[in-house]
Image 1 (tube, rainbow, N blue to C red):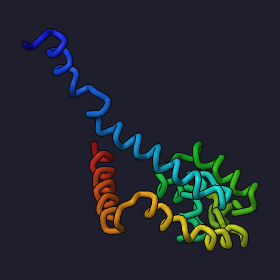
Image 2 (cartoon, one colour; image 1 turned 90 degrees about the horizontal axis):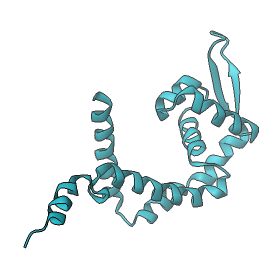
Image 3 (cartoon, rainbow, N blue to C red; image 1 turned 45 degrees about the vertical axis):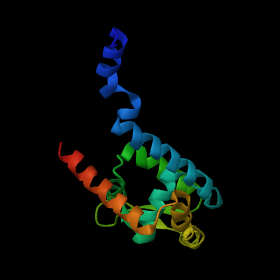
Length: 153
């Protein structure tokens, strides 16, 4: 026999927390950040700082605006990260000779050396996911497609 309570539960199902895509993504991100927090202790970096370093390890001497664009961060969020990395001796900030308004970020020797220590992080993350490299790459491609679609909305 169906009760009024059953009807309320059925109506609430689309709003149940476990039915939310956003919560699945959010909670997976929290779990992933927990893994990174453990792995990045040896680098003495936070996850956002690690992302900045990844950008600089790909290409050194980058404008602040280019880093922000790559990481989807505004300058109000990025500037404190860069200042902390500079204080740690990992990078330097310099005004562009061509345009004084532009700030160029350059790795220090210490920042370049840290890359070698960080080499194991991607493999450690892969191990923590208990996924194959192929499965993780497919999931990454799906998330990149989702991000692009959401950006157009």
